Image (tube, rainbow, N blue to C red):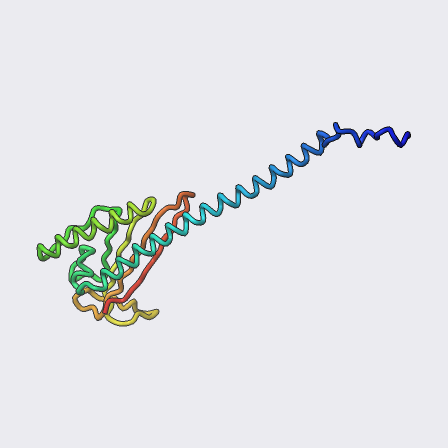
Length: 180
C-alpha cells in the first residue's frame, strides 16, 4: 500500500455501519423503556400514598370528633338504642332512622351526610364503617365483655375507611379507640 494513498478507513465518508446503528438504537430503546416503567411505577406509588394519607386523615378526624361526644351521642350515631351491644353506621347504605331529641337527630343526620360526602369526594369508591361496641369489662377468651350501651363502662369505637385504588386494589384503614 502506498503511504500517500489514504486507506479506506481514513476517507471522509467513513461512518457507522447499519448493524452498529441498529444495535445502538435497540440498546437505547431498552434503556428508555426501563426508565419509563420506573416512572410509571413511581407515579402509581405516589398516588397510592396520597390516597392512604387521605384515608388516614378522614378516619382520624372522625375518631377525634367522636371522642368529643357524650356516650349517648357516640352510639346514637349508629341508630342504635340503649339496649344494643353493638351498632354500626355505613356510609354506603341509607343512614339509620335516628330517634331522640330533634337537635341530636339533626346533628347525626348532618354528620352522616358530611362523612359520606367527604369519603366519596376524596377516595375512589370510598366508604366509612363506623362501629360502636358497649364494653362492661375487658374481654378475654371466654367472654367478649360486651354489654348494652346503657350499662357499658366504656365504648369501643372502630372507624374503617375503605376505597379502591386506580389499579383496582382494595384498601382500608382501621382506627380503634376506647371512649371512657
